[in-house]
Image 1 (cartoon, rainbow, N blue to C red):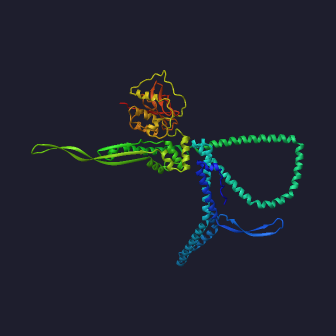
Image 2: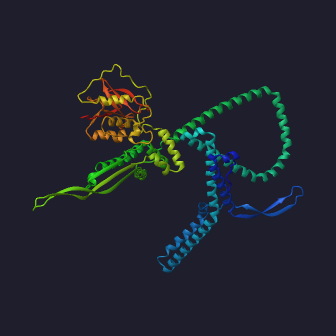
Image 3: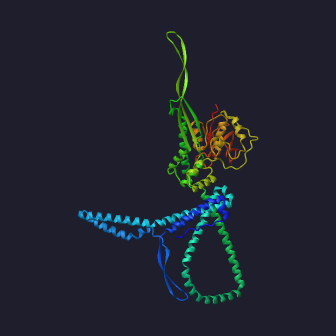
Length: 586
């Protein structure tokens, strides 16, 4: 068994606080690997050595590392002919079993003996292979520790990589490739050392041919000198071809590297599977919201209900990144168990009953004297405390994923799986906010809310979406166009609609309340919500607030339009307008 390469670090690196722990782990892994190698049984082989000067032969016994015994698979393959013969014999015996009870009994006994013997052989073989298995595990742990130490050393030398999850992931992949190449080189060196003995004999034979080769080389040299101009031209052409080939190879490698980085940071699942899984999670949140809305009817009999509730909502990209890092390619069916696991950890609903002893004044009148008396009478007052704690998926991921899986999770979060608009993530428009100068708005018959529109317009210029996503309850930036609209409605005194997902939450709310108008709806009003379907797949991707219309175009204020608040306008018949959420301000 070829040992893993042992790393060497300078004294400065060994005392570096950032490298001290991974280096110590690598050293401990190397010690364990050496001990495991030492436990592999050695066999004595008889080796004959010939003195090249005297020709005297010397025979001695030396220890040699015993080659790893064949695997169970190869053992089974080698035993296949024998097994086939035994199977044929058993088949012939079974033919006569029905006619002879004694034959049947003997046959069953024989089969039991064969099974017992096979189990004994396999158990003995497994016992003999144990040192080799332990050595292989120790070498694997050493390899992992070495790669981690090299990775930490690379981060220490290149601190700019520490802030970029994609760069860290690419750096670790490069280190793994370099380490594998070094390991292969070490194995090649080991095989070369084994062939050194054979090379000595070959060298003696080669010496006899050296003179002939030398003479031919001198003749070739004289020929080259006579035609040196032609050879110089040929050499120049050869170098030019090599330069062109090297350039093409570099471009190809660069393209492959870019393609590998993009594919490695893209969600591996199909869009419809990811949207279906997201819809399943949103349905669980809707059920939880319904339970909270009907808490008093589901748990009747209390004098008071006290609520301490975190907002219900999640970042769809955090869920997709978690599932992709853990399951790779997933479907709603394969992700069902993980969805329930994450949901149970994200949302913790606690119901606590409290009983207070309170007093009320009761008045009574004596029927004989007519005297009225009052007294304080104790009674039990029942209170139900309802608490909902929402722990975002970004806070759960480090505990639920392995270090490698969490690193991949961070890559998906940084790139949003190269599908930023998959879950209704806003508009990619990077253009400037439009000017409303000279626009004459035509008011319809429905009352709007000019105060809300003025509030929304004052948000123009905000970049990044804070405080809208923070107000909604998210701990970090999310696709915040819906959070912006919900925030504006809340500031105007409306607790509903409140939604963070356009298709999964916003559109269903307006449609279920009978407040929906399709594209081309003629009576839109300032303050209505406008939903967009950028890829025309039937699902809302983005939402904004209607400022008004001039009869041919609709003007909007949108959050997360190129990650900023902007004023935009569209033709009333623009095909990407999915419809309008009609606000009721009465």
